[in-house]
Length: 430
Ligand SMILES: Cc1ncc(COP(=O)(O)O)c(C=O)c1O
Image (tube, rainbow, N blue to C red):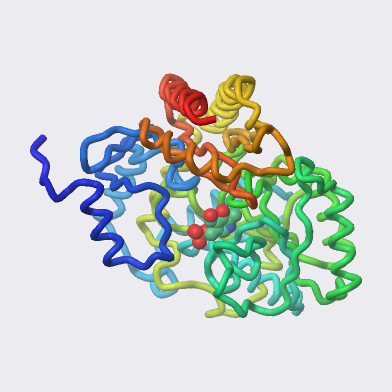
């Protein structure tokens, strides 16, 4: 293929740096030209295996043919009305289908926005409206988005909050249970009781919001017993229990929603990312009586629940059923964990291999010492893996976690090829 000499990674990155603000981070100096399922090609024609999946957005892979076809078909009918002005059926059907898939044996309603942060904002707005209370409890290490309320709820200062305050009032952070870092379920529950003692009485708390698996925070799963204790606490005090499933939702963890594995249902769920395979849409699903609290006009957005994104999300639901992607999520998770454990057996730096379904990560420590998280090795590993043709992301409160978010539609051979590159990268660096 004839290539324009100016279309190389370095030249485009130079233009990017000149035109775009530094705050917009960039994991790799790679400019993508095209993508297919779990592979991408840069503007210089180099191929990469994609273990990042657009940060948990591509459970159905890049450009799944059924999703592309559904969006093209919708484009030929109507692509924008603003739902609050003129309704369209795909939005209504999507709400019905997502309600049917959400845990909890009670009537529910659902509506759509454009981003994960917006879904979180709206869940909190609705909880406040329904309870007529103000306070919200979130968790250390949690991530809920980059809007002011999202940042306020987020439990990680650098780089998300530093310099951006003040944040909305009445947000309190409890400890997230994390056995690897010495926080037991009992410790985490005690930290909520401490908030009730030192900061705010439970009668003023509108909502508790938690990720079933902390995403940006490091792929730590909320133990089901902790979720059950939160459910009991919320029932006792009339608090709305919100599961932020923006990263865990849409089949990543082996079930459609990770909270299905808790044995108790949250009152509200937020979704985004993989629910529409890369088309921007987010959802709030919740108990009918809570969802109906805000008056007409209190919820919505110009682009919220765009017809194209609704068509894509409906196609994602079909693809999950037709291709049995929930079973695939479990199988991909098992394959990744087995492969990563083999690599871990050779490298003392890898002290934990964990996963819920296909939401899988390894955590790195200098010399295997749990007191010394190895952010430097994590950073060098991701950079070197990319040089060798594998796109990988880091995360974690201590920036020492390598996470895998490969599309569930990737073949076993491609996953194994990615694991081989990762193993060779460890051999070269660790
Ligand atoms: C759990 C969680 N909540 C909210 C968000 C924010 O989503 P968005 O970037 O679409 O606003 C994210 C994004 O990573 C997330 O992982």
